[in-house]
Length: 266
Image (tube, rainbow, N blue to C red; front, side, top):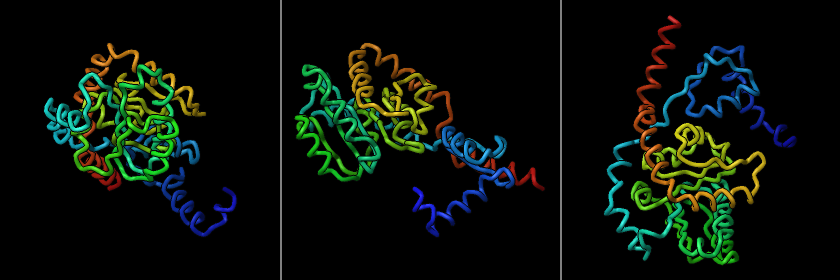
């Protein structure tokens, strides 16, 4: 906004940004999001050669070691759910920014017979009360579980069927990549940084959000659930992508880029 642009904070941060991304500067940039590169180039016309895309940097072994039938069965039994119930997972703090309310509306909009066997699990820190109040107004509060912040997210990936990520704003989104490594189909906002991986893997659906229309997400979720027969194929695509694409070696790749740039400047 215009008033914020008059503040010392804005002027200082804008100056810092200009010094990094201006085409007149020699700075090299490590980025984990191809979408964000395009955003900065739109504003600063930064040359391509100064951007270096590096992997997200996931701990693959930590995720894969938790993908067991026991973890899936135990978590579902704890929630009195059967293997035929559909569990949709959301991971991330700041519930409004992550679009938890959008997911609640989409769940409530499902046909009754479908909705009654669908459950939404939300992991992360955020303002839970307004989301539960919304769930009560929509008549779906019994199908929503907020788990709080967890350090065992891979166990929940093992127990879930779909990852939902209808975020209003998401520069990257590690949960998106984690779901692919776990073989989960993903419904994600098209503008989210790591939605490019879902698109490349052909392992899910992108929610158009320029502009965002709730009806679009509602329809897409319903269609995804009606296509359960395709989920094994989507799972295999996700697993193949996680096998073939480097999503893991961020420190090593970053160091290679740094050494290359330093070597080229000597």
